[in-house]
Length: 368
Ligand code: MG
Image (tube, rainbow, N blue to C red; front, side, top):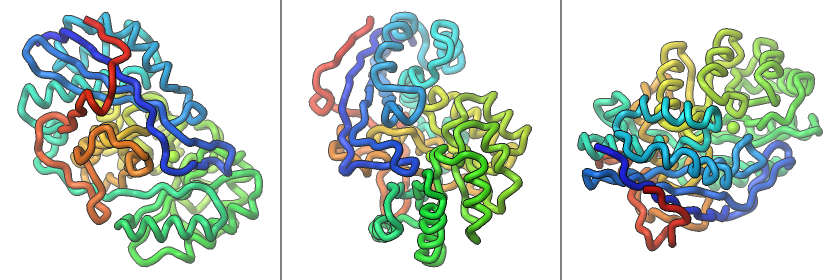
């Protein structure tokens, strides 16, 4: 089987309401997503989506994906999309780094492999059955009352895990947010306080040692070194996210015992091939993992959910659904959707999501 054509679409994905991170430092109103279809000489096609949230979030941006495709796509034509390691080696030789550019192409190749073998991705990732995956909400920064009302709304949709965005220069405000939100939780409800790298190590030590909470704290500071200064000096377990760009960063985080868990996001690390390697390493060292994508429609969410649904329960935390924050849905009714706080994936081959060209509009590039 050979790749015969690669077709690319760009789609703006507006957020249903403005979204604030990092103490209000970062505001997002819409996402720039790239869809790709890989056609083969055997009449099987695979789909992928790449969406690095907004361009101020990570060293990644929507137009960068399309620019990278100009280099990568012509080189992939003629190669077997089922040979995922060879495809990734070829992409890494052709364009070192730029992991986020490669993710959608890698996912589309996995989709081809699933269809060619008539198996869902969760089975190719090692599961006998697809585990129901708990979903977690994402609570934008605001006053304690505003944030608690967002948590109550999410609770009404079945969410029992909440990723609560705090962090800023006002330490008293963060202490008040943590204490008010902990007091508002109901039994069996979990919260991760996601700082999105807003604190210095000193601020993290002061805030976290001033509160009784033992909930997860995610990416308290900018770098791995800074987070390492916090880990072990606070009572809360540390989760890492934005400072992990590839496997070597994960290895370093484990060697230095910086975290008890990580976010595994295909677009941040280069696709499902790399994310699966990190997931398997995380299992072997006993990490707790939220497995979800950086952003995108239900297609990006679903590709990541296949990895989550094949991950042992003791290593798996809830997964976030970006598509629930969007005003447009290019794959209506398809893929992993929240059903009372859980996603249950079907056993359609591949990732099971196929957009129609009507929902995507005209392609912006065709390579053949
Ligand atoms: Mg995060």
